[in-house]
Image 1 (tube, rainbow, N blue to C red):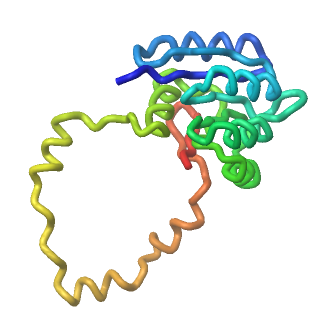
Image 2 (cartoon, helix red, strand yellow):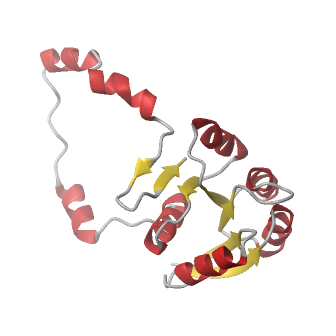
Length: 180
């Protein structure tokens, strides 16, 4: 499997270097470049054609959202994962409209960064033993008509699910993940 080519974009040098160090721990990630602004991100993405761009939302000049739109227009196969402190519905909605593939709250672990990148690229693999169990398991038998009728009426939980769409999934460390 080819290594993921990553561009890191943040206006804070310490954050850029920290992300680079965290991503360098994975053997399937190559950081191909870094940029300190949205303008530079668009330019670097055009030159380097990364698979993934990890980008801050708030930066002076061109925002991460505007840079995301420009990158996605120029290179629709490049996936952009934004990171921010803002978890409001409005911010998540704006990010989705800009074309992001993922949305992380600041301070994610190195493992989370790499796994989110793998997820949006379709490279997150299922453990071979789980895949073997899944592939050898027979399909369940069809439900009896009475059970099918009962399932046609949504449960309270099913009705609650739409109210949770777009809200961050919390991890013990406090970071959150949104994948579109």
